[in-house]
Image (tube, rainbow, N blue to C red; front, side, top):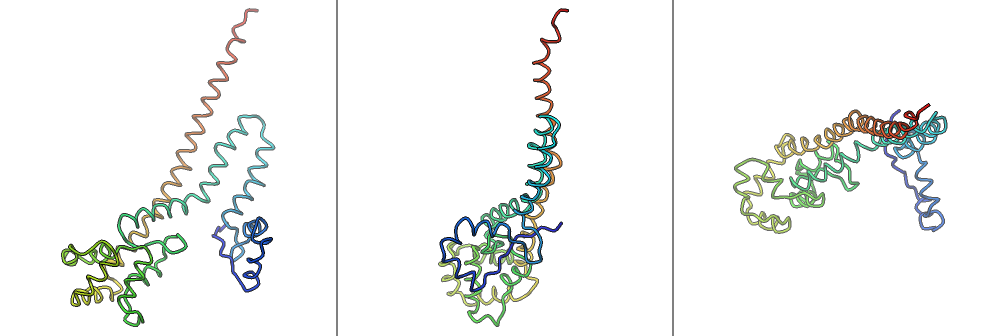
Length: 251
């Protein structure tokens, strides 16, 4: 079953109802929760809710003993939640750390990892851009990018030329405006679709997904099973210790 994040379509009527307190409270949250994706697929939250109601709920009710109920709580529930939410949560967290340390803008305003087309738009300069190269730079700033770090990635020669420039984006743009030839060189470098900065941004974009899958799969395949075995052995050992005095009674 394919799972997608729900993207609600807002029309004029929905915009009006948002002003109504009755529909913007709990009822609105419930309505959004049960909203299907654009193609009719379950959202992640709705998928988990169905798993709890029909799969996990049934297992808890039909469990033969406390040990089986405990396994459902410590193994099955975490497995489903992590399988559904693990990759996007980890991916977005890793992307934030990468953006913070490298200065490369790879996260959208929706707090998600940018798509390849979005990176192409951000890191390839188009002469048709009405706001010019200043607007191009401003867009990277608005995306939480660090101009000095980004432009220095064009090569060692460019890195040396920008070494004494400010780390502050506003001051950096002012200083770059006073170096017209350098600014023109940067503009030309960004005009090519295969520029080094775009390639590096595309590479950084793939890291969060790889890390997200690696951590999710290792958690589901290694950590949770080992934790379940440890808990089971611990409980059985304690149970045996409690029953031992009864077995030693004299006939």
